[in-house]
Length: 206
Image (cartoon, rainbow, N blue to C red; front, side, top):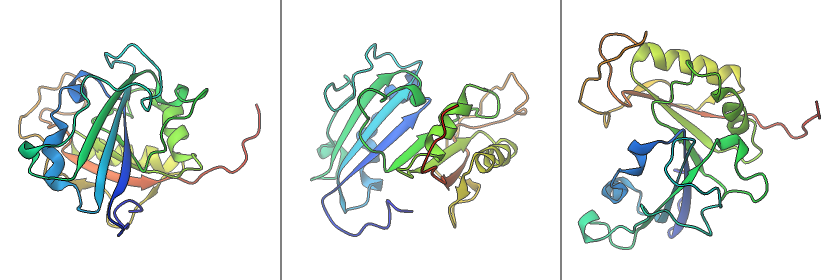
């Protein structure tokens, strides 16, 4: 991907986690430090979703959430700073008055994109953005992942080479009891796919 292809050290990488809820805000993100490439010195995670507890829509560069922290000896990665910010709101509506920090990567965990029409405008916002961030989406099972891939492609997403629907070796090992049509057994983030958008250079007013 564009992010992983960088070779310079001391880079700052910004990741937008969209559709975030309470679960993401409770994660001890400094534990992922060992998996962060050496060339990254600052990993900035911005958790964005209508269910986030943070009551403000102030862009995170001027307000940090309580979850913000740096990696430490516990993370066993000296020199790496991990900052976590939270924003409450719908992704495609935020940042209109004051832009959000530019994302290198956008991630949606267990989004249920195929179940909720409210994702339509957010997907379009990401995949048609002139910024062209890579977009990673996870799913509970293979069937859902394939459906999500088709939706992303229908919105202009181009599957990144080598990052088509893939089983996630870091997925949860705890089976979930599913009450809808996902199936009888599923796991958080079991599959993932990465796409890149096709930006629209000039939007025509409707």
